[in-house]
Image (cartoon, rainbow, N blue to C red; front, side, top):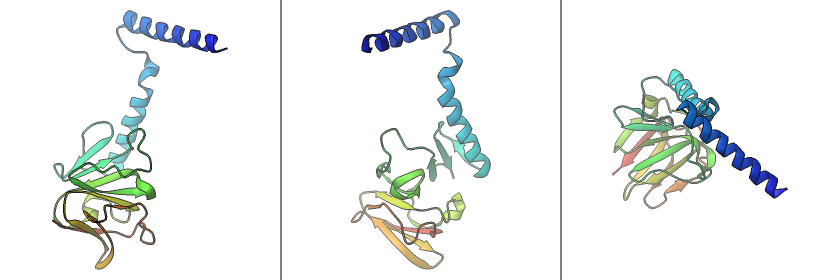
Length: 167
């Protein structure tokens, strides 16, 4: 049984290579994932205009001040994965994507980036400082160098509409 499976896999690999060599391009089914990613990017931009695609998974707003990542990298589901030098907030508890990230100091309205009322978890990945999440003038929670993660913003899921980073 195992030999038959290996044989079929080998035949499939040979056929794919032959198609690439003969046609000079990959088979149409080979970029199905790429098409799906591009479609997801297009849909996000249609409902959140003004961004510039960085790649098929990231969109930059405000000349790079705010970056949205649509899908988690493979193998990082449920893991705080904010890049160094940023603080991130996630659309789902336990760091579920999409993810928004900022790094600027001071108070910012999340509505600028159409991210108000969407924060369900957060990760702070800067060497110092902290960021507070607010609902209008009411403090909700902090993440910072001393307490980097909040896997669930409960009981304040989807409340935050401002952030204030102290550098």
